[in-house]
Length: 116
Length: 115
Image (tube, rainbow over all chains, first blue to last red; front, side, top):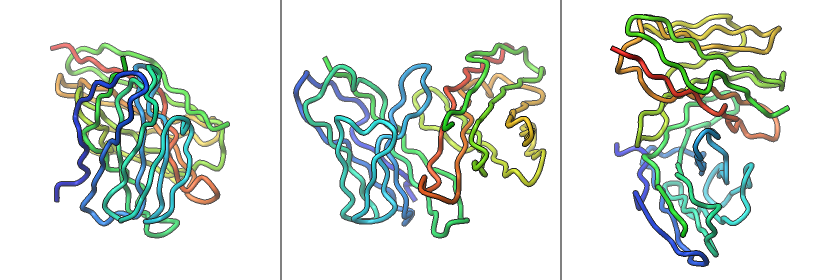
């Protein structure tokens, strides 16, 4: 298993540009997450999905959009990039097949995004 | 009420020493408390986790101590090694309810173990 993969690893955007961060997992996990990590601030949840076709906002969703058309893929879309979106973005997944199921989140390697 | 407060922000320990990182929470509905370890340029990875029905969990050199009444939990790294140098995040989640088990992370502690 490759686990959780993310592309690209690095990206520089100009203000106002758009891009999609890709995330794929091959563990057949139901739950997937997008986080952003800023220095000294921990990980903040942007969006999450409990299964194909179902997404919901996390703590910091403004400026982002997501979709989940398959179990494997959970892309994060940035529209009109702003300097405040400069961050490291992590995708994660977890089985959570039941309410009292496995809670371990498996993280991808991250995408470092700079908006200038 | 959803915050998890982590301290210290950074920690320097000599090789062989004990590293201690503390976290505190407010939401008494939290029922899962993991610690994640992150090396530079990598994603976080689960290190050890505890549920509130026990007060301590040990895995090798890593121990979680949990104090339900104080709403605090801590990570102890015994015989700290330079390879333990990383950023550590505590987190908490609530299995039931509208939060869907989403993790709330602390701000992280950067641990440096000096040879």
